Image (tube, rainbow, N blue to C red; front, side, top):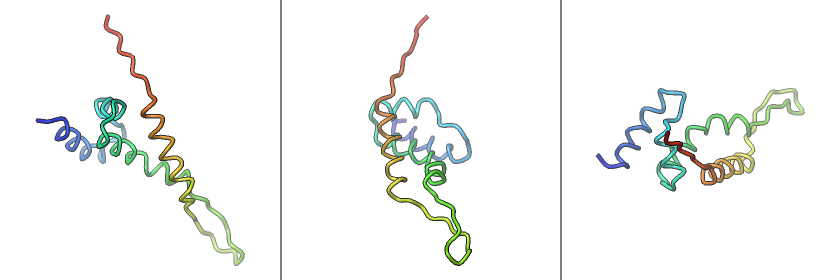
Length: 92
């Protein structure tokens, strides 16, 4: 089984799990774009919540608006953080 097939299989299992698997994070850190996309998608709900502004409009109606610029910025920052993440493996 190739690494792409493993990542694709993992992406299906992530939807039922709350944690991102360590091997998937390793692949994303080492530059696999498919793994990176899956990791970022795992955080889409949280990023969406962070970029949503809740308020009352002039007529007193409650509304929620998504700030697309902020959402895009948060995704970019997450991607940047993944690429800059250092993995130190101690072999004892």
